[in-house]
Amino acid sequence: MSFSVIGETGDLARAIDEFNAQYHEDYFAVRTQATSYLTEPLSFLSAHGLAGPLLAALKSWGAGKRGAPSCKSIDTAAQALCEPALQGLLKNLENSFQYLDVIEGRRVVKDGAPFATVAEFDDGLIKALNMLADALLVGNTNVTYPMKALLLITGLTPAYDSQVKGGLAIAGVSGINKTRYLLPRVACGDAKKICALPFHIAHCVAHSRRVLDAAIETSRYPMLRGEYGRLFDVLLFVQRGRTPQTALLNFTSSIGERWYEN
Image (cartoon, rainbow, N blue to C red; front, side, top):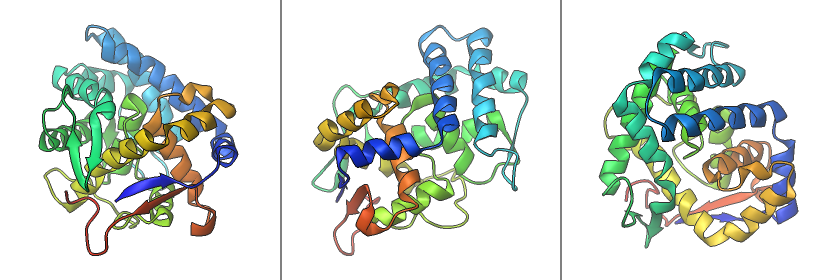
């Protein structure tokens, strides 16, 4: 079971370019500050520097509108981002992508990864999402905005908003495209569907890096180089408006086997 890239380089590049320019700008503004926050000694100054653009991006992406959770104040969010356990989890998640893979249908973590096992990765990811929800949002119940925050800070994995969920459904990924996707606090099927996705993306990148990198370089956003979680977020978002026949990405799995279980 795996993703495959079925779009040509030019088609992928056009999809990147047609994605909302403001959303691109939001992402890079946050990632610049996130890099400082994750690499420098933890301080209120670095946390505050991240909290401003992070909350601005979340609002730009819909927080506080149409029943979505609202954001906490910058100072409150910055104080929460000063929690060493949260920064440590986010740092480890950002550095995990290159160590993730799927071999013979099973998720694996390669030697040298920040998390020693798949179970540790899963636990860290779900903990981080819940900590981000508590740190940044008011009245949050769904996965969407904690996942958007995780994407903005770490670039690890797409966020399950309605567009991305629809794009995943067109690709052939089951069990994602539902109206309400509650934020899980413990290991369960919905938690596994969140945790398994970056493994399958990493596996696809390892086998399709040349065409993906060529699309990034051809596009107007070469800054996406190495930002594969964000790249898939963009491609899946755009794919929501396509048909399986014109899809950019495809996902195949064995009949009767749940893609997220192993």
